[in-house]
Length: 288
Length: 266
Picture 1 (cartoon, rainbow over the protein chains, first blue to last red):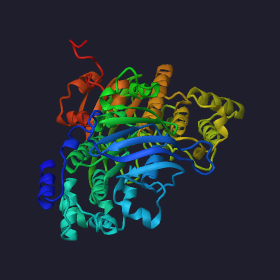
Picture 2 (picture 1 turned 135 degrees about the horizontal axis):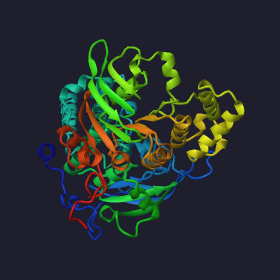
Picture 3 (picture 1 turned 180 degrees about the horizontal axis):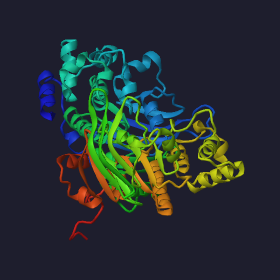
Picture 4 (picture 1 turned 90 degrees about the vertical axis):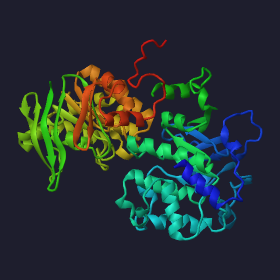
């Protein structure tokens, strides 16, 4: 699968520079030419009427081509953070540098050009797809809304049908599904569709908010593998959010740990079992 | 042998959903039933207590302490459920009536099982909540005021209140995050040690199987493909499907799948 998408991407867009070096080892701290695609600083959000902030003083960077894992239990603020990054939740304080531009305060028309650059995959694919739209219509929608002016490097838009076929192929689904409705698909297939929809306009950052939590164990493994294949073949950058430390460890080069709205630990994935880990991280490790 | 399922099939009008399954749960053990969604494991657990939806029919035998539960009258089953066999379900929201307080649930549960003294019911309800690490103050609260983990603990407290001999937990931790799931599992294990009840634990989470189960059965498309001791199955699965299931689940350590250390390792 990896090679087919690469072949297609290279054939269809020879003019787009592809920098394999930045993909080689994104977690190496010493590399000076790594590219920061998302830089979040001191982000904070308190819900109206709440005693404590949902998230507070959140700072991190995401490098191009990297998967950054974010672990924490229910209520720790992971999903609030995801929603703030997408700007579907208001930000009280801090900055979100996306591809060099702070989008934390942009609104309406000024935010719109940046919407394509960050996309999200939610936990529940049944709720994420419009039940009245065919799979094909759901897949074409982001392109029509946000992708028309973008230069796509891997997918090519010659016709609706051809574009949809490429997306379905990328997530290893048969092209016949284009004319089906969400209720005719299994949970795993539906989640593949929402992944295809998120990557089809080639965003700089994909936020994966518990993308496998509603799937059974076999589909979980397959979807995680697909996500990793897509990241390497398309050069995507992920913020992978989950309470499942084992899945995060398998997927990510670096990991940050959140507790009660704050980042309490951050480390290279290789250093998960190191002695200097935060007590809360150690507690999380102990339950797996 | 506290529960012995022999040749159990579950049929709808059109097809056989569970096909001649045999399974035994021993006195006081933690027995896991593992399988993907749609494998029929939940229906199997519902058939034990005559909880199948009306369009499904069960054939075969479900022997509980020697007598076939499939032949019992609905009234007898109502008395037996809760007292001898109780359930914990995945959907902890659906396990509580939204407009009734937590205390109201505990009270009704004891009333239908014949406890006439309101004072005793109240005292037992408070004890039951405390035994799962929740404050008796929660008795006055309504389900929506509790977190998912708290609700699932409260439902464990009700299930165990009348000291059943068999507890059936159907994906009891699936809807919880891993920390809350861990606390619920620790609680179940502790309560099992205290009461000696047998647990039939239905799950697709190997983490819990690895840590708590004595034996397990693997189910696929309505049939049991493999049964045996935990260590044997996790480290030496015989069936290809079992191997796939085990491989699909991400694990954190480089130990053997069952958690045992490899011979010769430090």
